[in-house]
Length: 252
Image 1 (tube, rainbow, N blue to C red):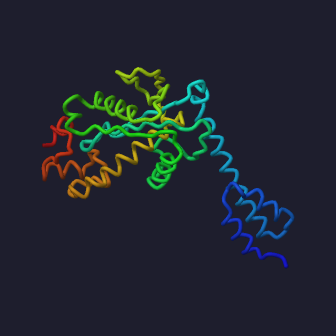
Image 2 (image 1 turned 180 degrees about the horizontal axis):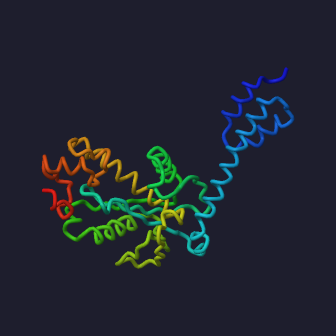
Image 3 (image 1 turned 120 degrees about the vertical axis):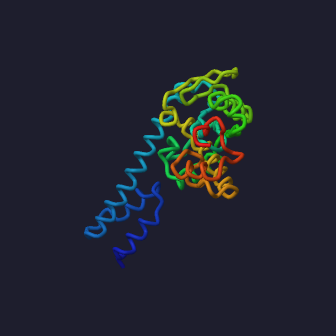
């Protein structure tokens, strides 16, 4: 008995993208218009998967360029601009045969995708770590030096340690490891992109916890950035212990 069009549509919908060619081949000779339309949709899904695999391959160009190094580490930070909360650096060493799709500059990804990727990176990375520098330290040494400090902390936590650093734009002082600064590296290197995601998710989770402590400031939404809502709360309630005093002197 011939399968109904509805059953075929359901089977294709339930098939993971990798397995689509095999399932599509079962219905290649079916001339019904509804089946042909369903197969066209499935083909588009598979084409998107192939395009993403190609994008991820291209994103590994720097890693292939330096493939003589065993442990290549991507470095990136989040939180240089906010009025409140820490600056967080991510350091990630991916396996040579990394198969994690959809890695990108964390700012280009939805929260849902970032969270999923964070867990996958945590599971599959050779090593991954974050460095966190709190607001008081930022005020003490300035945000640039605090960013470098966060990066050094993240690197120091890696096991195994890296023998090459791919950095988003900067050269980190006080690190005796070969460094390659890459402008807009979080969109050009899979390792830096992974570090960007690791740092972003970590910091966003911290700011969600701070939102529970200080609900007036909207930290769950603004993650510490100086939005109009945040500035209004500063003027009304004053700064919290997690505010960077060197960033907010114009508002308090």
